[in-house]
Image (cartoon, rainbow, N blue to C red):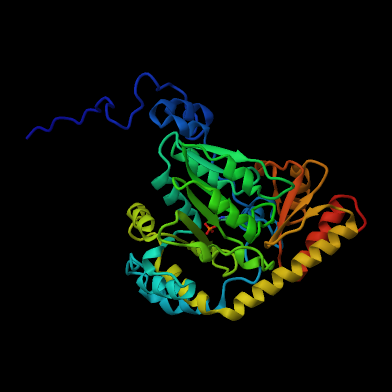
Length: 402
Ligand code: PMP
C-alpha cells in the first residue's frame, strides 16, 4: 500500500491574518505592531481601551528587586488578613473542590438576604463587585449610550463603558467631593447609567443623606443609578447614606458591595449587587453559570457571621487613619480627610517619582496620575507597624524630618 506523503497545505483558515492586514514582522504578540495588524479584526472601540492597572503585587516586587520584606499598601486590602471564620470554612470545604459550585449560590443568597433585609431575587452575585459592574454596563448601555460619573473616581467605570462602545462622561468633583447637583443636571436623553462611588475612591470623601435624597429625586426615570459602596463599612459619619434604605422595586437604583475590603477576601473574588428584582433577573442572564466559586461562597457565608473580625477591621482602619492624619500634619503634607480605608496625599512633585523611591525601599503605594492626580499618592491603612514604616519612608524620600 502506497501512502501519499503528507504535503504541507497552504495556510488558509480563519485563524490566519487576512492578506490585507498580515505582514512579515516577527514581533512578539501584543507588541504595538502586532496589535496594529489585528486592529481591523477587533471592534474599533477596543483600540482606545487600556487594561486596568492594579496595585503592584508583593510577589512581583520580590521577583524584580529581590525585596522580601516589602509591604503593600496599594490596593485597599484588609491588613488583618482574611476573616478567621472564612478561613476555617474554606479549610472545611477543600475536599469538595471536584464539585462545581452551586450556580445559584442558594445558601449564600439566603444568608445575604437576611443580612440585608432584601429578597433573594433582589440580589446578584459576582466574581468581585467588578463583575456586577460589568453586568450592569453590558445590560444597560448600548453602543453610543452614555454612562455618567465623576472625574477622579474608580477607573473601572470608564473602562467597562469603553468595552461596550459606550460614552463615558464625567462631571468634575467640587473641592474633592462628588457634586451631586451637577451630576443630576448633566443627565441627557442618551444617559443610561450613573455610577457613583461613596466613599469615593481615590479621594475618600463621602456625600451625605440630604444631598443624596435630593439627587435621587432629581434623576429622571430612564436612568439607572448605581451606588458603589465598596468602602461603606469604613465610613463613620452617621450621615453617610446607606443604599439599602433606598432600594425599591419601582426605583432604578442598584447598590454594590464587596467582600474584598472589610471582610478580607479580595483574593477569592466575590461581591454583590442589589436592586429591583426585574433588573437583577436581566443581569442574571449575563452571568456565567459558575461565576462565584465554591470556596468563595462558603467563605462569604462565614465572613458574614464574623462580627468580631469586622469590628477589629474597622478599629484598625479608624486608628490607622487617625495616625496618618496626625503624622502627615506633623510632616506638613496635605491630605484629603477620608471616610475610607485609604488616604489621598498631595506631594507637590511628580507622584511617580515618590512611588518609585518608596518602591525601592520596599513600600508599595499607588501613584495617582491615572486617576487625574499627577502629584498625589494614595496609601491604604495597614497594621500599625506598616503605617509607621510608610510614614518613616515617606519622610525620608521627601527629605522631611521623620
Ligand atoms: N469599587 C471600588 C470603588 C473599588 O475600589 C473596587 C476595588 N478596587 C471595586 C469596586 C472592586 O472590588 P472587587 O471587584 O474586589 O469586589
